Image (cartoon, rainbow, N blue to C red; front, side, top):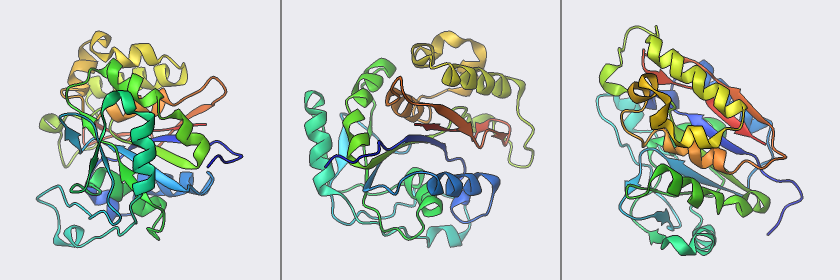
Amino acid sequence: MTTEQRMPALFIGHGSPMNAIEETPFTAAWRDVALTIPRPEAILSVSAHWETDGSMVTAMKSPRTIHDFYGFPEELFHVEYPAPGAPELANRVMELLKDNEVKADESWGLDHGTWSVLRRMYPEADIPVMQLSLDRQKSPREHVALAKQLLPLRDEGVLIIGSGNIVHNLPLMHWHDDSPYPWASEFDAVATGLIRGGDLDRLTDYAALGEAARLSIPTSEHYLPLLYSLALRTTADPVSVFADQVVLGSISMQSVRIG
């Protein structure tokens, strides 16, 4: 199905799972962006919290809500996001990514990188949702090449969301102080400039961006979803940044809208 209006693509800095149950400036921003875009026919999420060997796509009719965290209030573990799955869309994704040997998955579900955000954007949980995994074996450039093949979905009513954090260093995080480390602010600002400037090449080669980048991206899984979203940008797409703040010292909540 082709729609008259191309769907935007989003990158959401999802931060703490507590955003699923607490009212914050970030959850308000997610809710607001959902109100400004067409209602999706379906949602494809690329979450930092699903890494696999090889690429997988969820294909079940009723994905489970995965509480993939610990040490949080009991209330959070009782939250469910009972959105339907999208088996037909899974087949479409595998068709588009046929050169990548993407496999259908019947066991994963929706992890908190997906449902904690969607619970704010679409609280009715009535839009079909699926996830595409991050293949550990792929380089950043290979992830970008794969993501670009998903572009036709934007013309088919599918909202593609990358969910992670541009700056994400948990070992250096401090829970009771929102003052950012200088390196975290530095890299967040550098990334913002490159995003606005459309410099996907430099963002992809993030290891060459210096010490601030090394500290901000000690592991790649929270950063790669940004590349998936930016890879879906066309020359006609405007790009805007929202919810741009570094919290807990070393977590960037910066989110991006493409289109």
